[in-house]
Image (tube, rainbow, N blue to C red):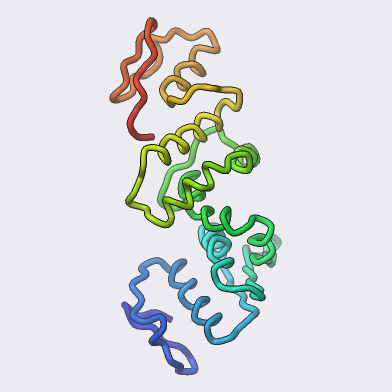
Length: 211
């Protein structure tokens, strides 16, 4: 268990490898204990949780804990209860997609970020499987979250466009938004303006700097 920055076990054992612990969220604190268990030689670990954020976090880190590890999540309650073999999911995804998964989850909507409306999980997953550039970009963001380079932002924007129109060839979110709006015969003047965009019936809008 964690108490502030302190870490303790029952029975008492050495904790210098993982203390002090500054994780404020229970989800990430659990992974500290999982890492410690692996370092102590455990090869089969089970975590009980009903939180999808934790399940994603576990999948995204299990490949970094070494081979031969069986990591299970006891997920849900009652008739929805099931055991999830996280190590098998991680193996099927591969190391790069696993490493990028936590950032992908944040992008698509989690406890602290909004989700994209009218996008189903299947189509989102299908598009991601076709985009190696998105995987590479998300891996870069996980390695260095503060270094949001233009090429990474461009790749993420292009992915968002494809979520709503897989046939689109445009590179600008505002341009894609305008095209989708006009398809149903609506007038461009009815499209709510975007900050930093110049919406005109005669010229395409400027791309927004941020999503």
